[in-house]
Image (tube, rainbow, N blue to C red; front, side, top):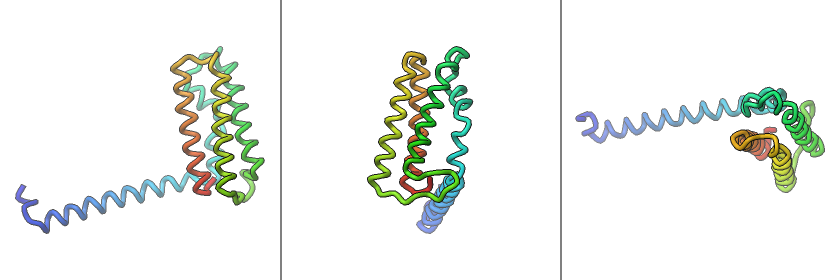
Length: 149
């Protein structure tokens, strides 16, 4: 390890590591920005197929679960429309209080949907549903508070 014996080499190595980390972060941020905007409305468009696969629903479960999931998603879209969001309109300007209201109502819709599915899903499926809802909510909240919804 004689390469690191001189202070100049250590400084160059640290600068190289810093450059790599900055490049990596810039690529991540760029990728995150690419899926903002209209993709939000399409990302969850085929929600039933996605949920069926993630929850590993039986055909019997699909009959009960999918209408409940779809209804919950429709309630979320109606909520957004009440606050002025639409795929064909310019994003409304909202206060922080309004954003927090939307966020809280989104969580309530998710909890209500999950409660309706407790008698139908097994424990493992309920945990996966919680994960799905957390992922959706994290993505939604990020977009809402970044004003990129």
